[in-house]
Length: 258
Image (cartoon, rainbow, N blue to C red; front, top):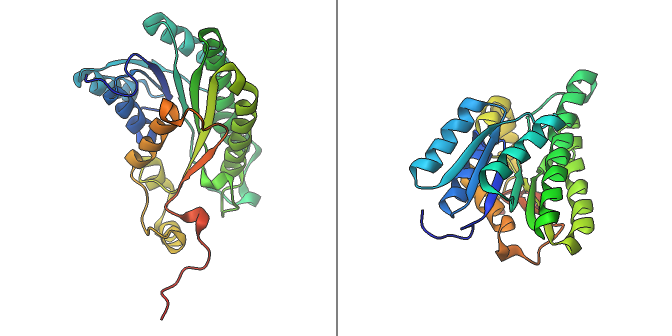
């Protein structure tokens, strides 16, 4: 594996068995990191770890449910046993959810918040404690544009991602002086398997109507941003929420002027 921005670094990427997380893990491997491919789906985690290994990198697949504190702690122990340190955490794991506010059950609400918000809290806290002992590190949380603006069917998902955004800012304020940089990405609609299952033709048409770029992101475009925030290139960026949204957040009325 040629030298890269993460040569000699150890990175945990949660939810990296597929989608955006997979692209981040593969990109980290290409840039020289030893990558912990953490996912609840052990088969997919092993497949991604094998891809990194076949390209000459080092990777460890770890099966983990990030909503379970014991499993998160076990993931950290496995990482330290294999690689001795943790330099980067990309808090990517989460589940999609689109359901009208009046139809959401308490069980569904709790599941989305437990995985998408509490899971990120558990992973970040466990990893930050290790980083404190090392003298620093970088944490990148994956939020969403759904956590910034109201959207149809996004009550639970949007509330969880809004929580991730504020959690990121609090972490950044508390950890910056201790050498730990914390930022977040808010992706717009991205061509992942999860999105293909959740977004019907009407949803896609609605997004295209408010996206200046008029297309969904490729997972690699989100991964490139994650690597920037995880690297020393962003050493003075802290507590920032970086929208990777094709201009969604900037757009107002969009039409072709005559």
